[in-house]
Amino acid sequence: MAKPLVVITGASSGIGAATAQAFAADGHPLLLLARRLDRMEALGLPDAMCRKVDVRDREAVHRAVAEAEAAYGPTDCLFNNAGIARLADVTRQDPKEWDETIAININGVMNAVHAVMAGMIQRRHGTIVQMSSIAGRKVYPDHTVYCGTKYFVHGVSDSLRQHLAPHDVRVVVISPGVIETEVLDHVTDPKTLANYRANKVRIGGGISADHVAQSILFAYRMPQNVLIQEICITPTRQE
Ligand code: NDP
Image (cartoon, rainbow, N blue to C red; front, side, top):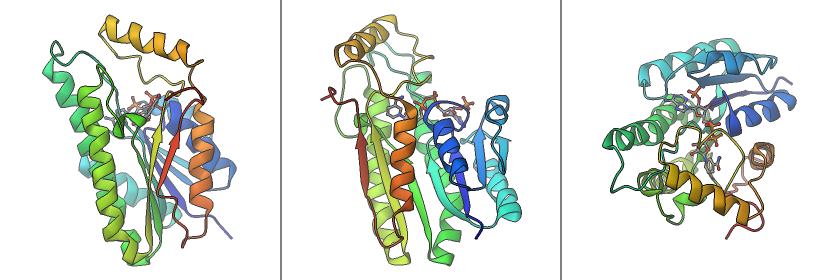
């Protein structure tokens, strides 16, 4: 039987790209969303509709989901992963970085939930995997606004779970620790970067995005009446 559609935001690199590869290997058709279309197309995955969409654009997210559902059928899984980490000392940080972080990590997350939620409720089937962070469970220096957005993901997801459980729709939160990706490529504060890198060396380095992808697939493949509410996945030495 054909496998159902999986929608992945932020699929052009890192954890999103690794998760796209894992779901494709499991035979799922995919809708991949991000701004770097070339990077998604370069993954070369079968049955993968790639669309250049900024998750801040609610209409564009809706349009892409509707187009993919017309081709592949209803969305059974959303991996709500797109996000940025502009880490810096908040007392010196340009507030434009706060705005960008909030718009992508909060509004972007809600836009993707909105695009799939009604269909899942109607079908009484579906799984929403929400990307948080270990920084959504405890605070770290120079993570102020980033932590705020990831605490938001936890709070919203706990509430969503209450609303969606009676419709048999699952909400999984994933909270990774240090993962080797491009996430810190845009950090502009050299002191913050140096501290982060020193901590990473101290804990023996980050872990691979593929390990995160495998944990998501594991949770998704559980029977629909089994919910892994949260996955916290970190390097072994990370506290
Ligand atoms: P990457 O920077 O490799 O991936 C981020 C992804 O998000 C990219 O595909 C990027 O695509 C996409 N993205 C960013 N902004 C937008 C936007 N406005 N619209 C659409 N897509 C967007 O880093 P990671 O894989 O590490 O990050 C993925 C998620 O994992 C993030 O939410 C991050 O906070 C979270 N995370 C990461 C950890 C880590 O240590 N790496 C730890 C804990 C959580 P593009 O730029 O092409 O639009």
